[in-house]
Length: 239
Length: 239
DNA sequence: GAGTGGTCTAGACCACAAT
DNA sequence: TTGTGGTCTAGACCACTCC
Image 1 (spheres, rainbow over the protein chains, first blue to last red):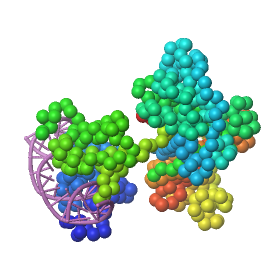
Image 2: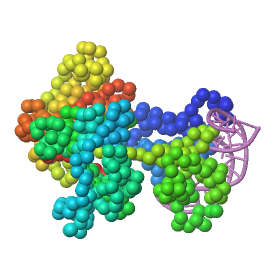
Image 3: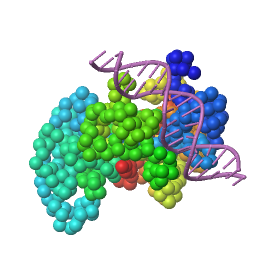
């Protein structure tokens, strides 16, 4: 069968994927069930085995199926209902909304690490770190306080940057490739300083995103991002 | 070249992927750059074009490359530094920590939808919905208030369930396959009812996860999950 | 028209699992 | 040993972009 014969139909591998997905949705195939072999599906659809292989390989990448060499292909266990939240570069996010991003630099210094920070950075006791505090504005309204500590070994020129033109995030992404990160999201009452910078009351809760990033086997940066709870939310969707 | 010749080496398509990724990491290939054609890479690695095709197709699925038919293959724009938070079934999460999950049912009813709810569910004005309010405990400490509205058409037997044995999440996952969801995370002060159920003060901020789930082309469920801010955080890591 | 990626074929050899 | 998936080949025709 040529592509012309198929006309407006989706590619064969896609139709095989749709067929399998349909069998799962309809209940004909249940979690853990063995599905037909590649050769059986190839015969059923009258196509080459490679075409079936691609369909099943992609469904495996999508975690719909599980394949075991020598054994067979199974319907994967249903995943938990999960929510994924993506937190991006704040300046980019604001610009993507068509709004104006501005930032003000409150602190840019080098400072001896506290005990907690030396542990977070996995550095020796008297380590010197770079520290910046920046407030980000969306259309002149403060939307984020970025309190960041940076490992001088990873970004030695950090203090020389013009953070009105480039965000620390953008600078670090360009300087130190991101290899891994840990993060948490909490709801906290703001400190006096943070409340003042965000122009909110002390009793207004904040969303606090904390993130530690790794680069080249070292801790590159430890940052806390404070958002006013009544002006900001993390949101998204998935399917 | 046979698999035996290659011995312990990774498959060819993987080595081509690694090569491209290395060129990007090293800076030899920059964002937007055109990469060699399939035929050029096939000649360079002395393999069939299909093998190169698989490597490039997978890198495209991973959003490392962008392919344009008739034009060429390009290095995709660098992704933002992103933080992904996964929120799972609360009962499962607690058990995974080795702790004891318990829940108490505060409300289980059918009720006429408010105007806001009819819009969220995309239903007509006088629609009847199921409503449940459940408090989840971790080692006897309240950790989540689950306030959930459910579409009766999707889960007609919702009111008959024993939610001390199965969470609404688990029941809905088994009854109505999850196709998509929207969600948000906010920091809010609790309502009086929520504060009482969570045994916290009115001034203690809460993390509020809101989630709307789709199943079979309909809105299955609209839920708000309240967590005490000082006892709970969303956390995770990625690399 | 030349060159690109998109898809597909009909074989092949291999590693691994079940028996 | 048989059957499974994992990978690869050396072609092919097509749709599309760019010149």
